[in-house]
Length: 122
Image (tube, rainbow, N blue to C red; front, side):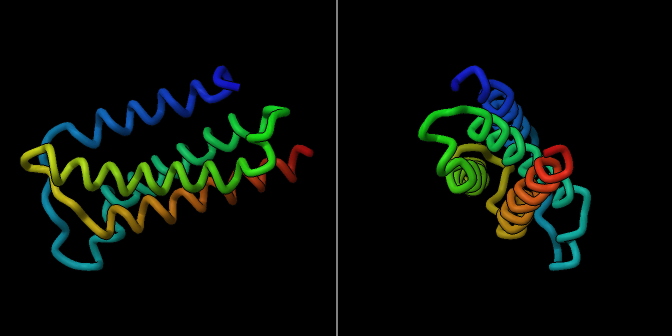
């Protein structure tokens, strides 16, 4: 099973690298939710959830039964954890609620896209 999760693990390290690099400005309003930064968060966590689902649901183990809940939980908690990590340990990085919202929406969109592909090619 671990072998099937390697793409998701590598993606998580990529998220970690970019989440802890450089500085960024805080958004000035809720309209900034549609900025490239938020769209990036949306896409990155959508891909992360998709890769986790692909890993968990392609196994024949006990992970397959609860793969959706596990994948969503990992993706959402990782997104929140990255925001806390940025704030706590990296000067010039900030905790942003809008990033968390974009991460969560992206995670659920990754699930929807995964389900769409499963039904289309099933």
